Amino acid sequence: MAFIHRPPATGHWPLTTKAKVFGLLSATYRAAYHFLMPLEFARLLLGLTIAACHRRIADFILERERSLVLVFRQRGLPLPAAMSTETAHNLYFGVGIFVVLVELLRIYQIAR
Image (cartoon, rainbow, N blue to C red; front, side, top):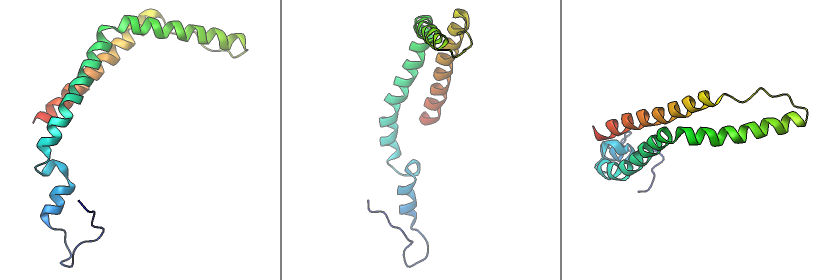
């Protein structure tokens, strides 16, 4: 579709052009639905995976964070201590559940 930079001689845009500009109003919305839905389910599974594996993820990140804090302290940069293990577990579980809730909301909005 060629892009028109100014309205036609009538002074207003034809309705069909507006419908093509706004994809949700045109018939291509069904194609967008079939294209977006697998991506939304993949993001939902990512959130579930983060929530399910939050302990392993938190332990991995904390190990790296603690080693970085030690390196910076050896170089003379005072950094605060890394967060506790329990706090990291809760944080990553919360991130996973947040991703799941956002994706459920997006799936609901797309399916309506």
